[in-house]
Amino acid sequence: MVDMARWHWHILLPFLCLSLSTQAQVRPEQAPLLPSVDSYGPSIEIARKNGPQIFNALHSSLRQWGSSLKHNGMSYFPASIPADTILYHGARAQGPVKGMEWLAFEIEHAEMFARSMRMRPPGQRPPGGPGGGGPGGRPPGGRRPPPNEKDSEWRLDPPYDVGIDHDASESPHRVPPPNKEMPGYLHEYRTKRELSRLLYIDGMSAGKTSMGTLDTQDVVLRNDINSTTPWGDYERARDLCDLGVEWGLEGFVRMEGGFELILCNFTDGLDFLSSRKRPKYDQPEAYNEMFQLEYMRGIAARFQGLPTSRLTIDRSSMVSAFFYPLNLTNPDESRPELPRLVSSESEVITRLKSDLHQVLSADKSRERNSIDWQGVVDLIVTRYSDRLQFMASEKATQKGIQSEINLLLSNFIDYNSTIDVSTAKQICATHYLQSIYPKTTQDHLIYEAILSVSREICNTLFESRIGVLNMASALRPGGGVLHGALAQEESLCMRSTLYASLHESFYRIPEDAAIYSPDVLVFRSSLLSDLPKASWFFVDVISCAALRDPDVSREGAYEFETDREIMTMRVRLILQVAREKGVKRLVLGALGCGAYRNPPAEVAKIFKKVILGGRRQKGVEGFEEIVFAIFDEGRI
Image (cartoon, rainbow, N blue to C red; front, side, top):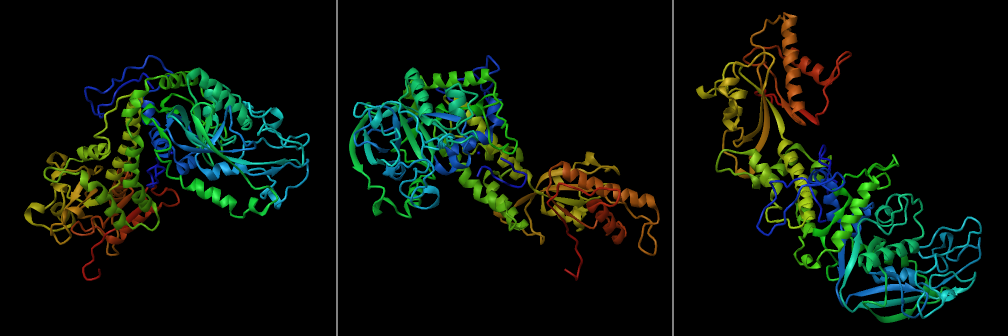
């Protein structure tokens, strides 16, 4: 789940890596980061490149909303469920499950699978109106495959483990003959110990889609890179549990319409608390128009995350495809924003899976020291997201945007000495990371990913200043500011730090040159009174001299075409410098129309032609706003 061009915020392993950034805090107990030994493993460079994706994965982990938006998850996290946690299961049998099955974290989620049903012959419409929404229709969001193309009868995969309480013909997952009632039971279970050997697969990993929601399971964990069908979830769960036996895992946490746990053995770690039969499908109690809404309400309660008292994940052991040199291009050209693993190199996939196995086999005692990376990301999101969204809106005014930028950045600037913008940018970028000490290799990768996002935000804010034209003297810095003159250049120098940036070695300014002064601090008002520090702001200044005392006709035009060409060249130069320096909003003026006696109408025509273009000349691009600030005494 970062494009800053228009303030859009799409905000908002024991692996071997290439290098450790000097920005990471170092303490004696901090784990070292070793050089990479092959081209298949993860690296700091890739983590930085995929910083926004890693940032979003951390922010969305265990959150229904973010995981739904960024539904093609690419990351894995070791997970655990505390002892005495209540979980729910919808079943067709009254007795407890003995083998592999699903558990829901929300009771409304399990109720969807506990409803009484009646199977119907092929072609017969269910009661409850179109779509089968009423009793007798299939549960929404279920794990059933689509109708068989030959006879259109619903068929379910065989159960993974029928269990000792019922034979195959009575399995809660086997379809009975048409018109036979399928009773439903809502089970409640309680964990009698911590379920500590779980794997959380992020994104909408329980979504049976062909968009890539299953790639991390089918391509990586199941080694089925050619999988083209999203159905067959019992077979998928069976394969995951077979892998779990090999890796020492007891279950897998996934998300679709709610979070679920595939528990590979219900007889190990669970207490069966109760089984409540649901109303018969044709009884009024079985159908309620608000049923679906109530289910969605229960799921929406977890939009911002599951309580840690019910499920925790170790983010310091995060294993992500975004760490690796993988080709994540989506073969569906209409959805390039969705990462896919189907085009990835098999050697890198093998390395990712091997690293994941190694992480899951590591000493679990380190989970006690897992860094709360989601908390770090949340601090950044809550500080910037609303303000960035406001600045991106069409309702934002120039004054409002400038105010927000000043408020966001002022805290990072030391006003007690010469303003050092580079230091301020660094303080801004590392503000929420300065107390973080990476221990695992994944910590180092995550640190650099978050730092790259934070640095992009801060640099963009610092560099998104308004550009101002200084109609400068070509001969001396600041014109006559030291002698009390009060023309435009002198006013700028008296109100800001511009004069300090105009070194004598820059003069005389050549005819085809301008001086670019970034991050000029404005600290006085137009009345030359000191501004409060909270109102100080930065601008970029382009100093360019106009043509001096050209010959002008009685009609107010340049006498010589060469003079017009010189002024046109300088106007183009001003706009070129601004564009190349990334200035989006530019304040211009009546260049040379005062003491230098250039004809105002001619200068206005030159600016118009250069900015808007003409028949043979293309206009300027890349600016969001260009303003002319012209002082006209008595007509303000």
